[in-house]
Amino acid sequence: MTDRILTTLMTEHPTDSHTLSRYEAAGGYTALRSALTMKPEEIVEQVKASNLKGRGGAGFPTGVKWGFLAPGAERYLVVNADESEPGTFKDRQLLERDPHQVLEGVLISAFALDVHRVFVYVRGEYPRPARRMQAAIDEARGAGLVGDDVAGSGYAIEVSVHLGAGAYICGEETALLNSLEGRRGEPRIKPPFPAVAGLYALPTIVNNVETLANVPWIVTNGGSAYDAIGPEGSRGTRMFSLSGHIERPGNYELVMGMSWRDLIYDVGGGVRDGRDLKAWIPGGASAPWFVPALHLDTPVTDDDVGRLGSMLGSGAVVVMDETTNVVAAALSIVKFFAHESCGQCTPCREGTTWMEQILERILHGAGRPSDLDLLLDISDNISPGLRWPPAMTTICPLGPSAVSPITSIMRHFRGEVEEMVMAGATHV
Amino acid sequence: MSAWSDETMERAQSLVASYPDPRSAVMPLLYLAMREEGGPLTDDGMRIVADLIGYTPVQVQAVASFYTMYKRHVGRHLVSVCTSISCHLLGAGEVLAAAADEVGVPVGGTAEDGSVTVEGVECIGACGGAVAVQVDYEFVEGVTPEAARSLCRWLVDESPETVRSDDMQERFGGATAFDWGSEDPTDAVGPMPAFGPYGTAGGA
Image (cartoon, rainbow over all chains, first blue to last red; front, side, top):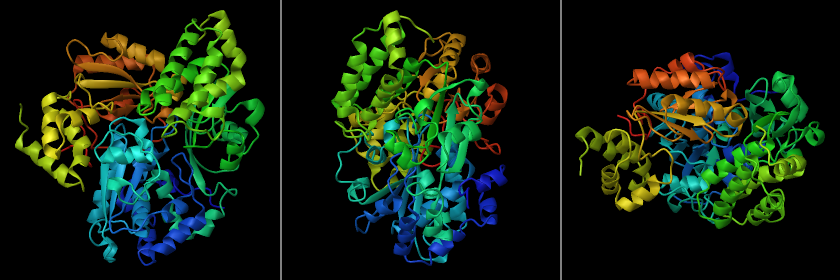
């Protein structure tokens, strides 16, 4: 069974996997050439059959999303390379180390969607990935693979890199589109969804970098071959970013379905310095935390993690060892969301700031006994019922994401928080 | 009102023409404005951007103020220490404090001689290489408090014209989030915010 799709070239040829010559020597752009002989709708069918899900965080089936694209003479494909979910650094590696793989996926997808203009929105803090992507586009143009007549097929495509400027919220697809239109990066009320009214109010598909990087393999091997990898509901391989108190941090391309124990202890080498595991975040800062007593032997799949009240999200696994001060950790995450809130919706704008201030005073020995219920009350105002997936009082999920660390420490470490409030003590 | 050089205006106009709607060029133009005006974003710079795309100056300000990378005040070099969860767990607070202390400024401050600004930032995507730092948005990963001091001392004392990620990693870095592969010969940047000639970032 295939256990590696995206990271083969960069592993086998670490010094030049980003160049066109190396990529073509390894069979690169043959998927594009064969795609250009197919009917666009056949490619869409293959991607639907693959059951590939979006790798940006929401996990929506890519083929289904493509199926929503409204007809129109002018339509867009936008590549979401605004990777900013704390704990996530996989798209950066894919762009830096194998940009042609991403570009080939982009070109095939644009052809399948009958799109002639693509924007790659790269976060501003990723200058090297942006340079590598731009160099790949330039090289491909020189080889006749981008431009007015792609590989002699008559198909015309333009691809541009657009640099962000430091705003997590622009990873939300409608905020990204507003940003690309030259506005503040504030999420839009949906519907309409981008597939109907996206960039410049025209039909637009927004896909994540890793998602599109899978498309060449799917075209070459067929959607059913991709659908044969991994457990049902979590097909294909997936990039996991391991970080925090883990012995071997890094990006790992894995077939899903192993246990969390295997992922953390076998793949990641266990908790650093042989310490005990206290908790981990299974899918980026937005995801509710897991703890060893409840979750270590459950499988790493979208369905299993979802059933247990969290998500695989962007594939970012953040490990916390026994020395972790959970209030300080939760504060770091809440502070992130307070800083990145766009400010449109009151529950998020005010709620994240209040939660930050309350956690701050608990951490610094000035907590009040009422603070625990107050934190939960604010959380409930942002996301009524504190359910998963979260209910929303806001335009986008940023506010509800800030609730995750609060419910996590209240559910699993309430005693520790209470103790800190009662003692008025700070332990770092 | 200051004017931009012919070369910069040409670049600006080609950026505007590269989008279906001129207003989409506001972000790359703001980077261009910072570079042309010598670092920080200025009112004059924003007025020129507004004229180029048919925005009013206040519309440009509304956009610029939304994003953290369009700075009104910044030194010749910008040291950004990540403070988000993975870096937090591995001691970002100490790294940030050491950097600020070495430069002699509070977090967010700029040295009196204008050489270096030190800031704490949210996740910059190098979590496996915590604690992660950027200088002029170029990565240095696996940074200890001591290394952060050496890095800042080097920036203050030597005031290098440009910085390179690969060199800084070699001198001041530790473990990286992933194997960087080969060096990037095109990545000498600086001073702030001199993005290279790629994409829509306002380069040459």
